[in-house]
Image (cartoon, rainbow, N blue to C red; front, side, top):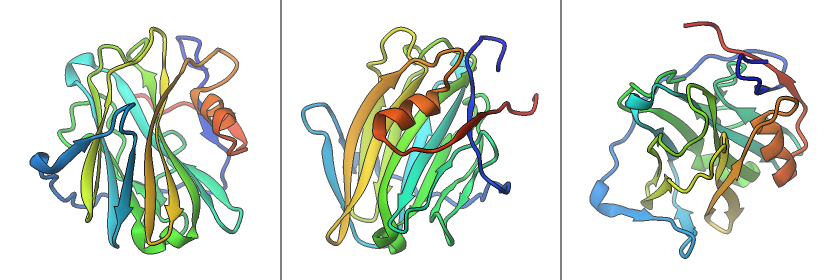
Length: 220
């Protein structure tokens, strides 16, 4: 448990992984489409790699963690996230990877999840989420922006409607459909408690059913 009393959640998995840095394709800003409460859906078509990038204000000096809960059609599931060094893999199960753990928001490219569209037929559903690991009481002053980019287009989700005390957000869900993925903006906010982590709250709300254990990161 951390000094601020919030419990950090680590999914209980067998082996550690390392981050897999990869070059990120630039997003053409003029083609970005904002997903909003009124227009929450987008269809992702084509093959290649889907990227989900999180950026936030370095001035906030906060450590945010981007993650993805993954369920595949064979009944297996996992969470890809910095805590617990669960960085996943793009080329083998779960076909989702995270590039790095930006501890301060100073990295110009933030944190990026990559999801293999070549293996989209293996997915049952995915949920992209973010939580405050330390350095902020909620998201209201962090300037968080999530950009989803794929060969078929690019979309943006602003994390600017956080209620006071919200320490985590279910950002977006991804569900396979014929010849593509259905992307849905969620922006559902959660407040961690001393006895239950942000990840556990999100898991319970969306029914993934994972087992979580407390964890902390090494000191910088």
